[in-house]
Length: 299
Ligand code: AMP
Ligand code: MN
Ligand code: MN
Ligand code: MN
Image (cartoon, rainbow, N blue to C red; front, side):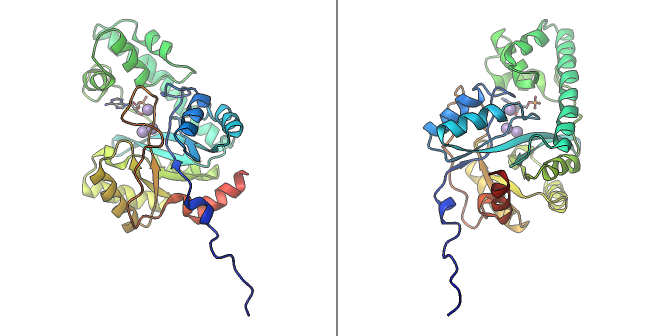
């Protein structure tokens, strides 16, 4: 008889519930990292990734809260990337936030954000809206001021009825408060994530409205750079988007990730722990060998 092998080495993870894309007050979410963790526990999530925009400032508080409340916390980030004249978001999972390459990269992104916030304020002032920069800072918890903080202030001041309308009227290309992104390249972002021991995921791919040609180019480049997964299930994806990107993940030999992109309880349509299953045939990122290696390294 041959020596026996364990029959189901991954049986434990099969029953776990994952939310691999969420925000806290460290970027543009409205719950503190500890409140976010509590919400995830309430919603019966087992493994939560905190993926704030261009910052790891919330991870330590999230880690401590998760330890207290018995939740698995995956250190993450959502990096802004300039690619083919538009902005893409790349989620990093299982990153080491202290890694020098990641920290240097983040510092550059935050420098641009600081300049951009002041510039958005100047442009809105020219358009007749005063005090937007200070107003946006008032909505920001740390030193990261994003467009969502401007949007909250503009709603408060009655310039629009909701965040969506602020973006449409003031903050997107062609509108008075728009400033073009000057973010990291795709190569840099994937590089920082991989250098810091993490897995790179293309966030909410349906949101970019890429042509078939551009999408092929992106998936090709991402694969060559060592990208790990597509976010197939996302709070901002329709059922059709999930099926389409589920298929594409298989065609391009990428794993599939799943995340709500939760920003806080103000948006009742997008909650933690209310995600559909990955479509059949997808290879969940949490069942990949790379994931197992990351999890071992983190313990
Ligand atoms: P920033 O990274 O500062 O440019 O801001 C991007 C963030 O703005 C996204 O992560 C969303 O949270 C938010 N956002 C973008 N577009 C919209 C929209 N149309 N309505 C509401 N929020 C939006
Ligand atoms: Mn956001
Ligand atoms: Mn995003
Ligand atoms: Mn996000």
